[in-house]
Length: 413
Image (cartoon, rainbow, N blue to C red; front, top):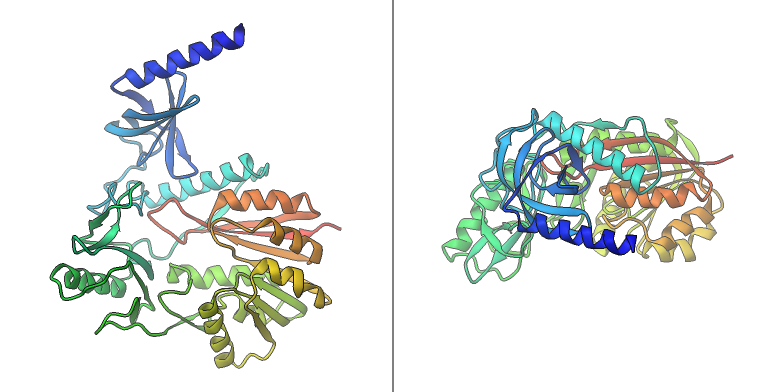
């Protein structure tokens, strides 16, 4: 009877909340997904584009259990970290969602998001996570995916929570060279000089740009970028980190963690999901031999060429999917000192995690752009005989809630 009564009271409460024109909520902190969280009417309220300390009036969009998802109707009192967004498309665009926070506020929010994911998903309590700020807070992004509506002759981005394309007049997070390309493409599509039926990928080396698909009079060739003493080749279709300004410190940290700070390691390093060789090349400077595993043929080809141009002879690139490589090839390597992995946002597949554990490397350096999947996978590795060492985050994506994180694990004695 009590459970039935509780369910009835809860349903009644939900209907009351839904029937209200709005709720006044004080935002307590930012949670994973970049939403502000507060409490009202015995409900947990989540609201986008809010800042800690904001007092806002929200309208309820939907209710799940005791959690209300809302939209902001009015800001009564702004929190101390709230600032005026720089981009006129803020709130409409599906990209940046932190422009309303000061940069210090963004870093604080990302630290809280990381701690929340580690604790709630991974069962890992961390006193503090060092978060390295980006040298560039604007004009940093050297990769773009522009949405095209060929019927309306619009090139821009998708609207938030929609597949509809809207016309983008400015994009202040883009590298200036890439933004000039965006403007030329946008104008050409609008005036009918460019006829393209698909979305357009763009990339920049901060000196020149390239796009895909090929469009007459626009470059679609290889780019090269020098980072921390290495030269990398890539194009608009191959994965490369979006923020070149933070890459030197980011790469140096990953390589130092992989080698425990030593300059020369007698052993094998494995670079899983190795892409165009961002970590493969510098790893080859420290380890006896390095194997990169990358299933994308074009990325693997770029890695091969960068390795050849660097004169490195102690490196192998495999084109097998990571899980297949672990099953078929890993057993042929006698002693693996370190595994570095940088998987997609979805994290490492279960077969990859189990395959790494079976290889029993001394160190695993896990690079992730999603704190939730990182925490999930770390929980598996910690239960499989590894201990968590250093954790450091890098603000690869200013003005958004996304953050890059590096976690180092060592095999238990």
